[in-house]
Amino acid sequence: MDELDRIASSSLAAHVSIVGSMNADHVVEVDAMPKPGETIVGGPMAIHAGGKSANQAASCARLQLQTDMIGAVGSDANADFLLHELEKVGVATAHVEHVDGPSGSTIIVVDPHGENFIVVSSGANAKVDAECIHRHADVIERSDILGLCLEAPLAAVIEAAHVAHAADTTVLLNISPMPEDLNEALRHALADAADIVIMNEHETAQWLRMESEPGLESDWESINDRLHATGLDRVVVTLGSAGAVVLDGPDVVHVPACKVKPVDTTGAGDSFMGSVLAGLASGNALASSCTVASAVSAYSTLGRGAQSSYGDAQEIIDFVQGN
Image (cartoon, rainbow, N blue to C red; front, top):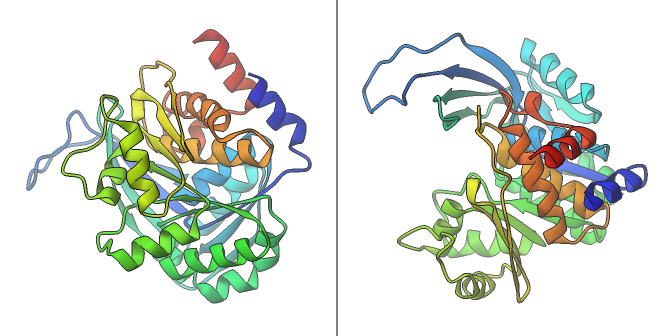
């Protein structure tokens, strides 16, 4: 892939910083998802390194981009585990703070189709605040692009975006998880924080207050206009196995998905985001970056866990050629 070649050739110069969450993922496989109130028996519990922001950083670093993580871990055993897993794939962790209490953690239940549901306990992630951002502002200011998501406290997200914009650093915001209290003021604040937004189709429907979710049969030109009206001019809507739609100004581009039989979709969306960060920092256009991200995220579903399933550039090239 030419886009991956460009990422590899610019990896020494391009710099990405990511602010947000780091979690120890406790994963259990089940034959079928439990119904409300139902108790079921699952397989052995596995622990993987995760957290949306840390996953995004790992995906980016696996493509050989200089990647700095800004966040916090606790005073428990998971702290060393999370840092080690990031450092192992090349993420710089000098700007991760240590705080008292537990690190972030999640409980993830995965069914035989690779679908999952996730419960997040924020732990140390909740202590990433505006003051933390200012203590590490220099790494944001020297970055080509900043990655943000909403697993970090909102005040930290907004402040990090302000620091980035003051330094002419591009901000890519994954509006996920979508806030339950999405009022007009919050929607305006998030739109102002982002230069480019990534959301899945469920989150896009919530953002636009649509009664049903957009799909491939939707009028994407109309959806683009409605997103523009809310202040979002450059948006990537991810559609899972149906690929993604890139709404870049007036342009609407459909990026197809690579066809795979998924084993575990945990962290696939985060690998997409990390790959888009890598592509944009390397000078690829948004749609081209999403083409790489589509392959990276598909590859990630063939392994278990989030960070542990991500491929490097050569593995992704081999996967695309064999797909």
